[in-house]
Length: 125
Image (cartoon, rainbow, N blue to C red; front, side):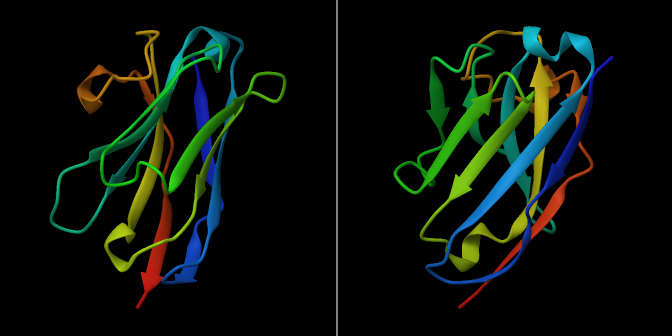
């Protein structure tokens, strides 16, 4: 069993930065790859970024590539999402998920086994 806890969301102005954290509890977390997703009101949950379980490879959605960076601190069982140059269209609830498929390119949320509760990110113009 893996439990995920996101934090770091909040209100930011356009162009600002935020760092999200996803802390995992559960011995098995080291065997899972991790992805960040987001969901805006009335929209489906969409892939943002993923990292493999060894923090050796990552993958990004085109709309965040070059602005966001995902990383994983294995010792702390925590995955981060550094978000720079934020835009109003980045406003959403951000979720981290753990998937048994050891790839940073697991884009389908149905392939994830565990989810956190989400953290709200709101970017004002």
